[in-house]
Amino acid sequence: MNVASTIKTILQEKIGATVVEIEDRSDLHKHHQGRMNAPVGSGHYDAIVVASGFTGKTMMQQHRMVYAALEDQMQTTIHALSLKTYTLEQWSQLDH
Image (cartoon, rainbow, N blue to C red; front, side, top):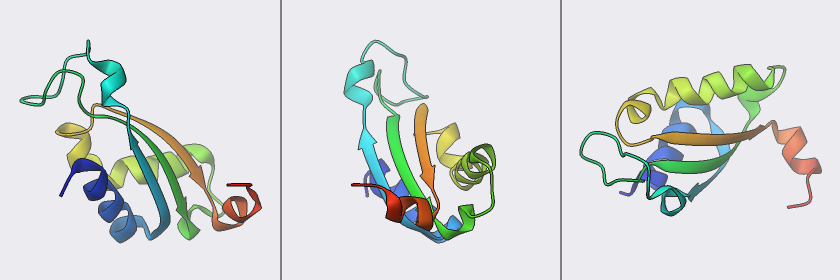
């Protein structure tokens, strides 16, 4: 399983995310040092995460939920993670 698939599975299981879109942006960061034995520039991701558990929480709280769920990956395979989080209601109102 690749890192993007692993991230998606973890977020679905740990926070009940119903939509997880991951884009690997590592190719834009080839000059950056990687994690441990990871290739230089690896581990940069953009993520859109939609979860009912985000309802009533601030954006900071939502992001903390995601980072907590991905704690192990943040120490190994994820070098940088850009997040956009949405409640189900917010997501349904977007033109996507």
